Structures are given as structure tokens and as C-alpha cells.
Amino acid sequence: MTPTPASQKLFDRALAVSPGGVNSPVRAFRAVGGTPIFMKSGSGAWLTDVDGKTYVDLVGSWGPMLLGHAHPEVLAAVDSAVALGTSFGTPSEPEVLLAEEIVARTSVDSVRLVSSGTEATMSAIRLARGFTGRDKIVKFAGCYHGHVDALLAEAGSGVVTLGIPGTPGVPAHVTADTIVLPFNDRAAVEAAFAEYGAEIACLITEAAPGNMGVVPPAPGFNAFLSEICTANGALFISDEVMTGFRVTSAGHWGVDGKVEGWSPDLVTFGKVMGGGFPAAAFGGRADVMNLLAPVGPVYQAGTLSGNPIATTAGLATLKLATPDSYGRLDATSAELQRLVGEALTAEGVEHIVQNAGNMFSVFWGVTDRVANFADAQEQEAWRYKAFFHAMLDAGVYLPPSAFECWFVSAAHDAEALSRIAEALPSAARAAARAEKDN
Ligand SMILES: *Cc1c(COP(=O)(O)O)cnc(C)c1O
View 1: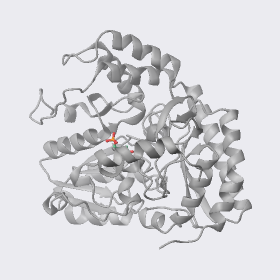
View 2: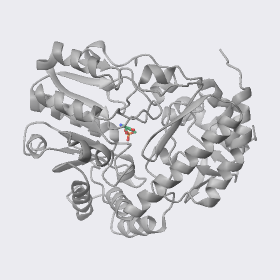
View 3: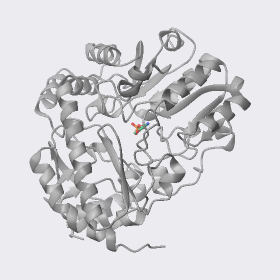
View 4: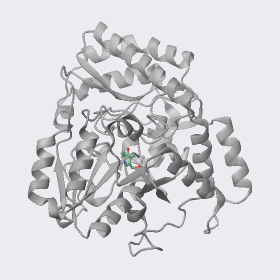
């Protein structure tokens, strides 16, 4: 491993004043070993760490940086907004413009802006329970919907990376109403609704899961979920925090919702729509949304919700995310998937690359397609450790976990791809030679 003394020094100080030295567990290097890299700046597809080393970034702040870092037009919009003041605690124009953009692009009639994806899913579930007068919720194993108590049952992302079985601090009665099912399994969903149909407030799913690695829904699966919810008087919540405005201008709904004719009752958004600032949203059918305070009795609020800087950055990002950008993102992602696949095959590393639009990930040591969380957990995640560090040494920043999605941006160009292509052969060799640790 290349020494990174400035990162090491900051990490030691961080450890002294914060748990694990990080403010979100997914940033830790627990699953891959070593010291987290402290980044100092970003520009386009590139990050520069505090030791001055550069990396091609394939994390993109875990999804938000659709256009790459420090896009000049986004920065200019933010600068102008900052000069006008940073928070008023009153309605302001940028939040209306962002809400109009979201409503125009997606299936939702109405949106409420919040500050994180967690807040969006938490509020959507409260609203679904308020609307239906029911308590039970259905989720899928391996799907991550933020750190909402009731949704941490068999969650993906950092929960699976760290191998946390349930989360202490979440009382058993809070998850007692959460039914966890295997993804892509129609029979399991039918059985759950047959038994509990009249008690189920909602089913929540990632529109195309990216938090157990990328596991796309089987054709027709979202439409099936939507239908069975409607038939049972439950609401269908599509979590597009990761996929929204990333895989198409309308999110994953734009991929199969329009074609298969399903539409969610509620949708959650985040990541891209904040343009690198804390902004998220939930929205949906007007009759459901109008149950929210101040119109209806379901309470939901936020001091910084619809913050003028965050909404300005989000709107600037969405305005720059044109059909042309999505075409480029898809092409870059496809090229990268090809390069990774070829490098691993050349070294005899068994693997499968799965994608949902331009989101993709690699499953190590598996030969069949991964359809759910149980399949995902069969992978040889230990091979990824060796691969990850070889790539990091060669200046490519990947998610420090085999269970996370790789993100490209519209700024990933030929130069960025060639840095990755140069790094791949020796990283693939490292993965081939890796030995399982216990
Ligand atoms: C990231 C994510 C969340 C949580 O969003 P935060 O802003 O981290 O709270 C929720 N759902 C999905 C699908 C996500 O990818």
C-alpha cells in the first residue's frame, strides 16, 4: 500500500474525537483494511487527497455527483445563492423551482422536500401508515432505505458491509411490524399478502437495488409489486434515492415504469437531486400527499428543508442533466463494465458484472446471476479487498466494500477511463491471487 501520511495523521485525530473516525460507516475501510483516504478537493472525474495524490473517482459521493465534482455552472449557481443568504425559514423561490422540476420529470403529483434520504423514507412510511390506518410494512432483504429504525431489518449498504445482524438500539417492537422478504421472489410476496394483506400499510423497495451490489428487478417485478399493493389497499413506495435522476432523467421509473405501466403511490428521492448538498424529497399521489401537515394530520417538518443553497445546487444539476448526459453516462458505464470484465476474465477470476442503467457492480467468485441478498452474500468478498487496494494504489477510488455500487459521472472522459484501464490488469491479478482470510 502506498503510504498516505497526511490521511493517517487526520485519521488518528478523527479517531480521538469521533467513533471510528468517520461520520458515516460506509466511509471506513473496515471491510477492506487500511486507513480511509481524506480527500481535499474534487474536479470532474478526479479527486485529490490531502497527500496530493490524485484518483479517478468511482464513488461520486455515493451517487450525488452525476456531473462530476465542482461543475463550474453548479458552483456559479451556488455562489449566487450564497450571496443572497443561506437559510430563511420561510418559503423561497428555489424550492418551488426544484419541486416543479421533480414533478415534471417523474410520476409524482406533489413533493415535500427534506434533507436526507433517511428522512424521506421515514416520512413516506409514516404517511403510508397514516393514510391506510395500518401498521405493517414490507421490505426486501439487502435493500437499504437509510437508517430508519423500522427499515434496518436485514438492510444493505454499510449494515451488510460490517456484517451487523440487527441493530442494537432498535427495540424489537419497532421491527415487529416489518416483514422482510427475498427480492425478486413473487411467491414470497404473494404469501405475505395472503397472510397479512389487510394489515399491510405499504411495501417499500429500491426501484432497482444498488445497496447489496446492483441487483436489478426481474422484468415485470415492480409492476407486480404495484398491482399486489393496490389489490390489498396497501401503498407501493418506490425508493429512488439512488436511482432517481441517475439512471434516466426520471429515475428507474423512466426505465420500466413507463413501459410496463406501473406507477408508485409514493416515491423517495435524494442523492443527485441535492447536487452535492443535503436535499432529498418524497412525493406521490396528491390525495396521499395532502394528508401531510399543514393540510392534513400527518406531521412532518424540517428547519433546513428546502434550503435555498441545496435546492439551487440540485436544480442546477438537474438542468444540466440532459438526455445527452444520460447517453454519455450509459456509454461510459458500459465501457467500464467491459474493461473490468475483460481484465478479470484474463486472470481467470470468476465474476459477474450486473447493472441497472449506468449503475453497476461486480460480484466476485460467482457464476450465476445474483437475484437477491442471499445470492449476493455468497460472493467471495475477500477477493475485493486485494482488488480495491491495487486500484487505490494505482489512483482509482472505488467504494471500500464489495456490496456497493460503482458510480460514473458525466465528467468521466477518455483520460479517466485510461487511468482505470491501466490499473485493471494488476488489480485483477491481485484478486486472482488473493487468499481467503478468516
Ligand atoms: C442512500 C440511500 C438512502 C439514504 O439516504 P441518506 O441521504 O444517506 O439518508 C435511502 N435509500 C436508498 C436507496 C439509498 O441509496
